[in-house]
Length: 435
Image (tube, rainbow, N blue to C red; front, side):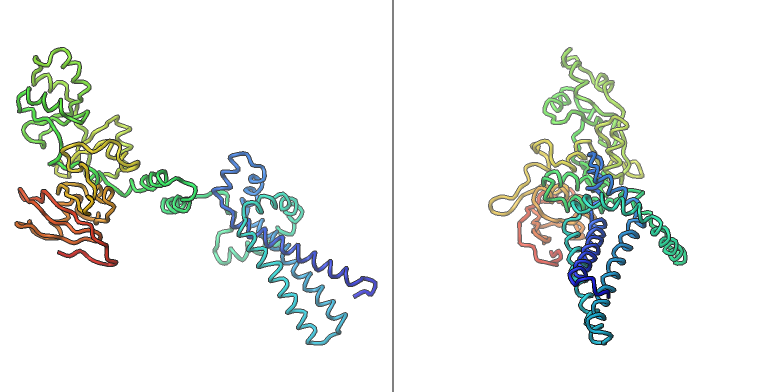
């Protein structure tokens, strides 16, 4: 080492090399850790630094090449400088060379690798955006070196049959499950109600009309075989804007009566209303195949300008009724207050910790209203779940235990469970249902 170069100059040169190495280390981590979705959002807002950063990440192979070239050159130069100082001061003694190697390795590891990378991982966005201004000219200057290095890299990748990385050109693509995770991870920024709505939208694809339909036995419809006066009384007390009309049995549905179309006729004189006039007001029923996903059905309602549909199985038998409101409530929660006389009326825990419910109530509705976790993989109603567990129609009061609650059968009628008392009990981890 030339004698005219003072020690402080060597120390300054070494510190400069370590800073350069630390710069490339912190940039590498920040660029790889930055949130791509957040970055795209900043680009759409017109952030110039974000646009520069996205351009750099658009060619990850070139970006990583220039970062690693700079990092390794700085580390190699620092190691060479320390070795030269050790040889100059101590000669070719093995212990001196060994000590110099250990010291410079420790210094590089602490000050140029671990610490900068932790900082880069902690604050990726501000560091990536700020350093993009410096990286762009460095990348342009080092283009020949990057091109030369990448010749060998691409050759090795081809031998290994690995596609070269022009990563980032296709943008960020997330699967539904990844989107769900993004929503859950953003819980500190998204209000609870909005987060629940977004998660419910993801569930629409996995749910079918069978999960939310009003069962056939609970459909409120007009029997056209009854006297017109009785039909008018039923219409006056109806909570629905549209009613299925049938002849004798709901399976023989003739059409859908819109009460809005009926109002002008009633205004002209309800006493003169005939059954034929009612039939003339009926619209063609809209049929829905069983098993249709809620997301698909919501789109079909929109395309066909329909509000109400009747669910049928493969044999054409009527299973239930679904409306647009039913699907919307799966997303945003209940729209209207519970109506008197429905199985889904005021379902809530009493102060004593129990709730008396109708056997035909939907399991999904029970879980939502009472905060329990009845199984949803099989039967859709509480009656179906109890009969499945008991494997028979009970002829006497009995009790079935589920995680989180016990179901006491109060009444059975016409081969179905009509009334059930649910009793809240502490859920035992891993506990199975018992009778």
